Length: 216
Image 1 (cartoon, rainbow, N blue to C red):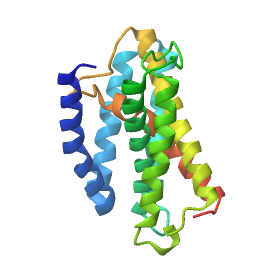
Image 2: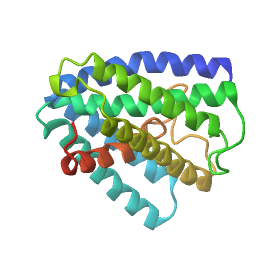
Image 3: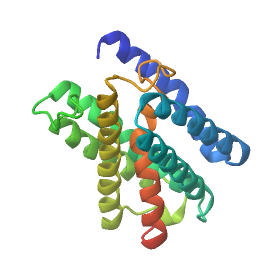
Image 4: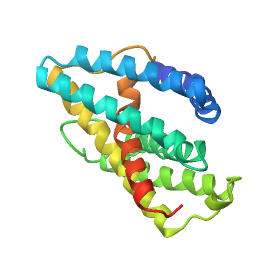
């Protein structure tokens, strides 16, 4: 990725993150509108990307389930938006850590499916997600989130791993379709599906874990 693309990526992130955080915290109409819009665009990008009828149907079904569980993750728990912010932080840190470490440390490739993925990027993803969530817990105003326990450590590594796997899965379908990005709506990032691919796997997984494993 050249300097111009990196600059576009940074600017897009600076604009997008406050909007996302505001919508998560405010909830209600703001959050519902955001995830509905993301669902519509992601569905369009997925249908446009795939020619295989089975892939189209399976992908839309997966998107419906994923966004539904994202909605429940935001609204079902006592602390509401703190959980969704927590998972979002893991996913964003995973992406940034992988990008920075992979770009500057390079090293052996992780898989041919996603040529830009490296082992150093994986390490960076884990490291930054752990560091960022540690400080999230340390300074959180929610009393139950005040301690970074071993269960949280394991949870962060697990969700970071799932987010990275989700990224690779979508990369596989992009590779099959012989495209670089699912769209061009986000300068420096590509499409909405490019931006949230890992989250679409991480959020539903987090919801399932959190309702069955009471560790927070």
